Image (spheres, rainbow, N blue to C red):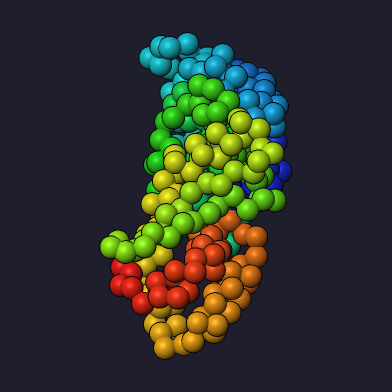
Length: 283
Ligand SMILES: [Zn+2]
């Protein structure tokens, strides 16, 4: 939703680094044998992600063991992430840190709000062990976003949430808000899709929005903002209030942030400008 450049990391080299300190030697030898398979899966992943078709990677699901995790390769591969990349002091930890740092100003690219202090697997490692340490599959994310998606696997093109490395919908103002009047004044956030978006892209943006519960996340931020704004506006004449809100809306420009959407909605509401700001808004 908030795009990031794809990490400039070679998938094979990352895998080799992660497994470099593996003990016992028998496990390391097996992981080395899997290197070509892992590199090939990473290549397929990048091509699929670039064409918004990660749902077409079903043949990589539960590989190389098939459905039987007890065979061990799948556990060794998911362990490459948990023990050999995410763990402090592990061979791949520097790469993990580098991926976390790639989040702009530390913000989660999935919601644009939380702190990106975890790594989310765009395709979950439990279903796709071969992609457990594939850099293009590792996205810095806040913990709530990471948990919200969980182990979900897209079954169709429409079920794919947006991928920060491959999808960019920032060239259009799609995040919108509407005000509700008393008895329960409030703000509801929603996706206002571009009329030229394909039905698939529209469905994906909606999917992203609901998967990460963005309407609830943004609505929860509004109370404090409005309490301060309403205090500030109290006693001012209508024209001054309208100018103030319009100036704030303009200052946020065409961003898809909850603040920008909020001020656009306020500026477009004669009710709010006239008297709505006098209501009690939760803070
Ligand atoms: Zn987030």
